[in-house]
Amino acid sequence: MSEVIVNQRILSQWNGPNSRMVVDLNKQKAYLLVNGKIAITTPVSSARAGMSTPTGTFTMSERVRTGKISNLYHVGMPFWMRLGTTPYGTHAGHLPGYPASHGCIRLPYQVAEMIFDHTQFGTQVSVHRSWNGA
Image (tube, helix red, strand yellow):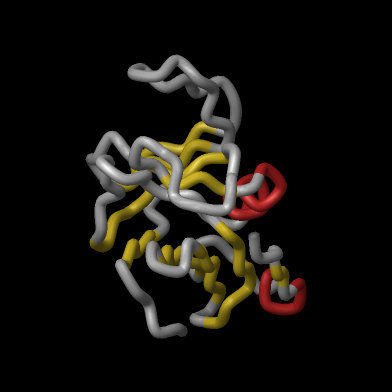
């Protein structure tokens, strides 16, 4: 699994509405952008075969730091950030190095916390099959 890259200089420029998140399903990576520049690059785990992660542009419509439990699978989803009106979101979870979720986008725990702390209700999240960069 690839490593997490954090550019503290760019991350420190966060002021609320100046961040957005991009997910590249083919690369199994997510990026937090601040002022259009990549502040965090992280591996993710999206939907496994037979399941799907929605693509498109969403806004974070629900954010729950702790205590969120999946209604379907009854597992904890720390740092939950819902994708628009879908039942899917991003959250901390196990990353085996390949797509393994039921459709959500799993993030490493520490990265999920950093992204949660540098986004807000309404932050844009774009999920692409393939993304060509900032």
